[in-house]
Image (cartoon, rainbow, N blue to C red; front, side):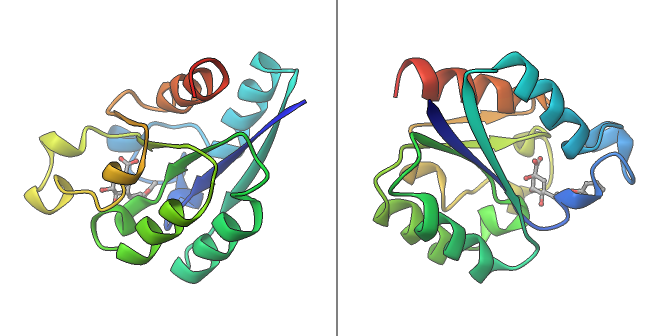
Length: 141
Ligand code: CA2
């Protein structure tokens, strides 16, 4: 069975609870059930943390074993060379996802340290972006 790791970074545990106009009204855990139903033959490992080091530890822990990583590092996307280095260090291909269209927002959201370490980036398509990333990693990576 193929295994994918889905990683969400800081504040994404608040999805569905705050700022619905930007991030929608669905919790990620609720969405994950939909995703699991869509891909019954895939083991989706999910990890969310508000702490940079914990995100790095999880990439190290599973990044040599899984078939791909879907990562929304939240605001660490724009700041973390350390997460970028972790993605470079492991063997699993990664796809970066952002729920909102970061390019239509503040300029500090326009740059990502992670994009260059990823096979591709899905931006602004809401939670559907995670499904797109999963499809890519199952078919093309
Ligand atoms: O659009 C995305 O997915 C982001 O990665 C979300 C990050 C933001 O810092 C990035 O620039 C773009 C923020 C996640 C905050 O999530 C919340 C969810 C609900 C309520 C409040 C925050």
